[in-house]
Image (cartoon, rainbow over all chains, first blue to last red; front, side, top):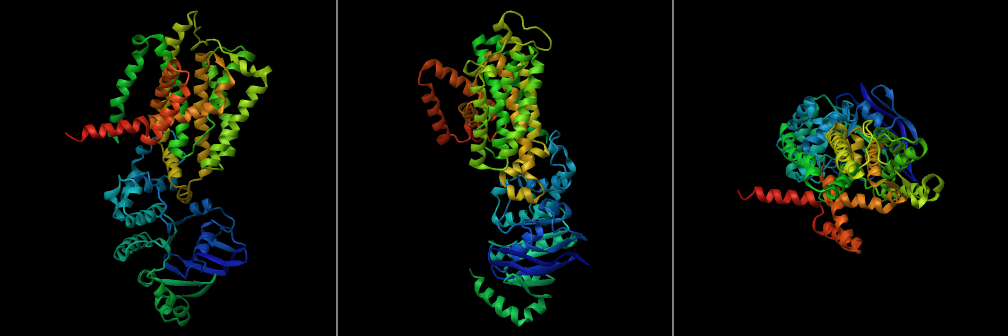
Length: 254
Length: 322
């Protein structure tokens, strides 16, 4: 069953067709990797799905409804969440506050201004539980701006996860992290999303991570989908290997 | 969660007692200076909901303070009203309406653009007060007699009225405002504002409609300033365009920076400290603006977190050696 599908989605910036008639489907419960070289249109596609941009033409369906004309706010309500390649956190707030805010927002409580936030025990317990799952409970009382980069990458995912989305986009969850830290981060994230039954789309440049953690891979190239299949099929696909993986293996050291 | 509440009581109780007995200990001149400080404290508390908690620097808070003061003056002039409670209600309403209209425009922008817009809009109000002299009295302003408090007439001794009964009246409103603001900044809404301050992109992606939240904060902020303006009017006895001009907005910013806008009570401390500083600087020298300017420069360079920031550093040093 497909949770999300786009039909002939187009987006141009000037003469540049960033996303060119893309049919992209995400099935319920899968962990999908979206790969492609820089400028392939991955991020634009995610921005179209999350509602940051409107497509020039085409249609986007999510969870059985046409969301093409919905605002990003409505899509968040519908269950689409995302993490960020460049970490976006509330740096002066504690790690616990960062996660709690997602929960307050999800429960529609952020407009309450006559009650103390600290009184809502259930929210704080859930927030602490989320931090515990991500191995960040020791940092609960520390401002998000004062923890290590690897921890910030994890917290960024935790903030999106705490929204309890149906579909979670992870935009390069291990970018800027040392090679040694990458696998532990991905182990934690993949265990949590699998346990929570959350459908995940990972945008990732690191091919080791892509092949190890995803069940299906979609390859984009010059605004279009070049290949779509299980990791083994993609690895054997000559076209992908030459146009993409070849450049990636050499490009990875950068 | 009980620990912070205890910590607050530890300084709030002695401070409250000091404020309660102040009129009986110090002379009327000191009491009135303190009274001005408390009134500005309410305005700066409101101002800091935008600066400290939402990350928006308003350079136009004179508009709401002045709107509060002029509402009182016009209620006296046109409706012969003398009740302080009606003045407060009228000012809250007027400042809320103006803050909704101005805020609707301003919250579309942030940083310097937000600051300049708030400044420009406040100057519109100033020019109205300045030019429509048949309504506002122009630069002569409008007189405001001593009001009745809770239906009780003010009596004939104005000094006695201001230094005692009016002082306690303002103190009660001040405490109420401080409690209301404390609850707001510690509510889920207050957390959302701080999230917007720290990272608006992320705030949007956890489902917070940032413009709506900024507008609500803007209106609350304006209402606090308007309420302060209404309390200020009978104390000053005269509403002139001076309370609408942008340099007064600058003084509100100064007070917040002086006290420390990263701290909840910083704005109150800053407002009281600034009032004393200005009173004595004006009394001592004709170059009082130069003196205040020097203080501001030293403050920004040496104490960016203001008096409360300094207090925190001192408190941390005292705790450590033991």
